[in-house]
Image (tube, rainbow, N blue to C red):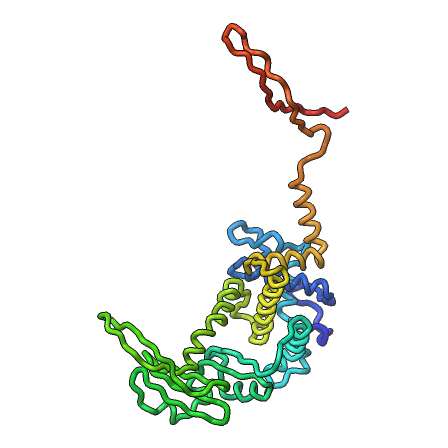
Length: 345
């Protein structure tokens, strides 16, 4: 936290700063995750008393005040400020990412080397591919033409369904012409083609050859898209956050999804939605680390319990109906539930 190194700053949002304890940090994390579950236009609305825009009841002073939450959010850091270097942006996340990596290794066996990652063009670059090869990891992904793609590859004229390749050491770049140019980089696959067919307007069938590793990418990229679909509805990031705050919180959400997978696998393929899993985790964190939350939930459970007071306790007893008039030809014996109120002694 910023204030650990800046003790001269005494107040923030008009509140005297006090040392942040581990329990309070867990509460902050749980509340932050919940802001992605329940959306409000402004962060301050979560603590609002206005019934038109108020957040869930869990956002209240007994658990964490609004000003305390905002002060932690403002000065949260994922590595010591003195470790930040201008020429190394990831130095702002170094300790945090090392901690995540170490925790992942204790929970999941990464298996043998020679793994392959599949990326979209937001991440892929020639530089990244070179670095991953030094770590025993292959890369396959679409790439933007300004991320190290040779100029001569971009200038070759192509007709639709035509391809051209260029290789340097273990890295293979392909440009494939469909409705638009598609660039794909791979450090594992070799050049080759896959027979495809497509029906055009009017029912005409067209046969063409498509680069095999582009077909491989299309078949396997669905898993990456599924991850994005799981996380996007519960994203708690805001435009006002600094870039390293966004990355830090996004990694936290990714770890939450990973833990969900491990949780379901440990339960013999038990299935639970991401929505319900987030509620389950936040409830567990808050119940463990927040006395205010425990008081709220205990009071709620007590409120919902039936009263045991003798003056208001009601009993259901069996009574016999009187016999019908024999003149009417009916003689039935039945029973009903009568409600008696037991009075106190």
